[in-house]
Length: 199
Image (cartoon, rainbow, N blue to C red; front, side, top):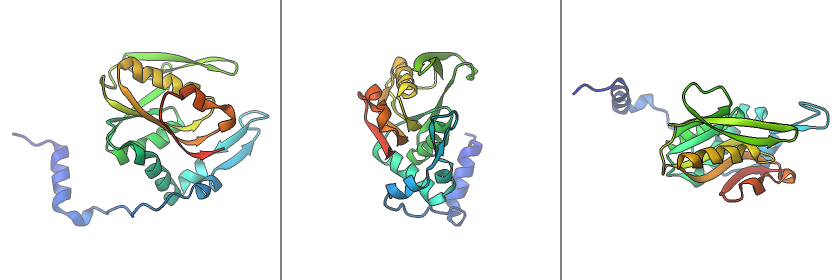
């Protein structure tokens, strides 16, 4: 039987443990330290909006690792992380890696190349749509939905509708930050929601 290139590579790495660097041990989560790394940008992208910029947190290796570990910790045993475009990809990919899970993108309409399912959601001034590949998840799979921010909850709820339309089970929703005054949690109150930083 021929071995795949991947299995050969993995076996080779196991035979030479000196080439594998173990990650540093996880530290207790310091939420205030994470919050301090989120930059407030007034009047972006338009006047009257206070934008929560997570890029300084992402640029800190210790903070980024702590956030990923904390988001992944409650959800061991899931098979798939569904990450929402676009900043949800940044958070969702390492969370999937930490959990040993697959990664499935939920994207804006027209950006996925194969057969899709679509869900619409309401914005302040109209509607928008997100899509998922129809064959991306198997019915019965346990899924974690990941995004960077829970605001009004419309996008996350649309992603949840897509997952459930396929027949998968939503184990939870994990977000880096939550804007509590927008009450997005009410839109997804059927699900277990983990948010690290609450405003």
